[in-house]
Image 1 (cartoon, protein in one colour):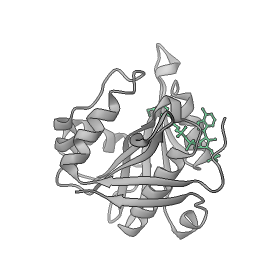
Image 2 (cartoon, protein in one colour; image 1 turned 180 degrees about the vertical axis):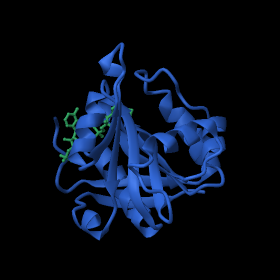
Image 3 (cartoon, helix red, strand yellow; image 1 turned 30 degrees about the horizontal axis):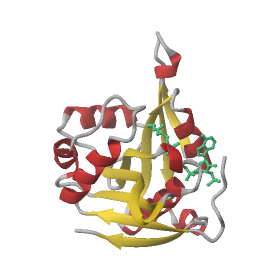
Image 4 (spheres, protein in one colour; image 1 turned 30 degrees about the vertical axis):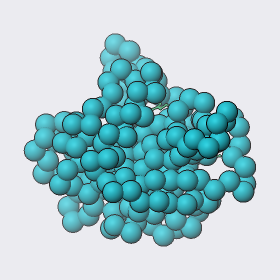
Length: 204
Ligand SMILES: CC(C)(COP(=O)(O)OP(=O)(O)OC[C@H]1O[C@@H](n2cnc3c(N)ncnc32)[C@H](O)[C@@H]1OP(=O)(O)O)[C@@H](O)C(=O)NCCC(=O)NCCS
């Protein structure tokens, strides 16, 4: 695993919904390992009218440093006790009673990843630290995420970020497909442990 240079400053862009949805559709084209990519329409439908954050880390192309491209992204949104959209209602039901929704804000890590050639250089840590700072500023108490046994890179990464496993749903036929739910409580002590240097630009 390549170590991020100590002096590196990550360039992060925080997008508004419409432009962000288009950017997500674009960057997901680069993730051949995922069968179900999100369209901009799906993204808008999911994020509209709920607290959300769309972050992208940008970096220059190695063979054309004047050109800056999105290399990692992270999309998260609020989930509430009474969801009407079936997928979200199902998620909340699975998280309860482990996660308390009454009178507190819970943030869900919906989408994210780093393009293959840019992995292991701290881009996802920088996005995650920016997300945690935003979550704290916006009154969230906890961040939850769902993954699968077979997403080994993501599981290792969530370990490094000190996410705790809160639920496991075994798949009887294929344990690689078993679901793992993790969570992290957000407080000032979390922000104190952040170590990435970041420059954040906000786009409409
Ligand atoms: C998981 C993923 C986002 C990590 O992105 P990244 O930009 O390479 O991560 P970073 O370089 O910021 O690393 C963050 C931390 O995780 C660790 N890490 C990252 N990938 C790792 C791996 N494969 N094995 C062990 N540790 C790993 C790093 O060492 C780093 O720890 P540190 O900051 O304490 O030193 C990237 O591998 C990816 O996009 N994978 C495919 C996406 C995926 O599996 N999605 C699953 C859907 S839930």
